[in-house]
Amino acid sequence: MMNNALCGIPNLQVPPCKKGAKKRWMTKLLLLVCIVPVIVSIILLGSCVMLLRYRRKSTGARTENEISTLGVPRRISYYELLQATNRFDQSNFLGIGSFGSEFKGRLSDGMLIAVKVFDLDLEAGPRSFDVECDAIRKLRHRNLIEIISSCSNVDFKALVMEFMPNGSLEKWLYSHNCSLDFTQRLDIMIDVASALEYLHHGFPTPVVHCDLKPSNILLDEDMVAHVADFGITKLLYEGQSRTHTNTLATLGYIAPEYGAKGIVSTKGDVYSFGIMLMEIFTRMKPTDDMFGGELSLKSWVNECVPHSTIQVMDSNLLKGEEENFSTKELCTSSSTQLALNCCADLPEERISMKDALVSLNKIKTKFMEMLLGD
Image (cartoon, rainbow, N blue to C red; front, top):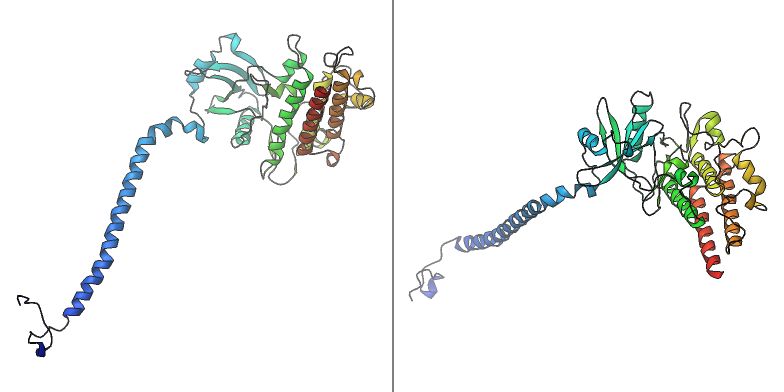
């Protein structure tokens, strides 16, 4: 009673059901089941999009301020560099390099920088700027000089680098006001070896520095060494060696095949590293006046190692009366023998920078163990 929608067969004394009513009811139920989840999904998706937009807006300012940490070079204008370096202040002049001059400066935020200004009157000046930018734009290592930014226009090209307060290794080796003990010298060469191992083996495309020498090794406030000056660096895209007849490098440090035929390879850097390893323990430049004709730094050291290492070592490094004399002499002999292994005449006979780094670390470990034993 009172159910006007009730329907069925005539025997039940109710009105007959209309055909298709059940089908329509099932259709409505099916639509309801399908549509509701879709509507809920659209609402959830819209909420997520709005939440993401809100987060981006709230972190936009922080992202812009911290963009330098994402590998994007800092923008520094030409006029800001002029103001920062103040070239009229002679105390800011750091020296003259192969392709220009270097200045110390301070940015408006107080950050100390070194600015390498390329001499565009030199034929190789602009090319050196391009090479250095190309070589170091993807390189990141604690023992490579950090390039903060660059500034380039038609009449001016400069690189803005981190400032190294302790200057170059050359200054510390040959200045009367500076001195390095055995551990410092060993640590510096381990730093240089780490940088070269990264350049030679850290990328699918090997990077060859081509001009390794003490003046291109800079020291920070903690005396950590940083390899600098990539002006004639070569990227070995085609293989393990290339020929460059117009490549400039420093006499005394270049490998025989480099000087004679212009052949560039990672083994050329290994040779230069070996010469520098001899130099840091003998305090003798390969271009010293005593070397000439048949006598070179390499042959001079080779005649004395391993039996008379004391004859060629820096007198400030080994003193007969000191307590750890024998320990230093033994480890210095091992270091100079490693240097000779790096300076083999044939490139294929030289060790790799990976092996050189391992050997230097072993020498330091042995040195520290012997000191503790003494």
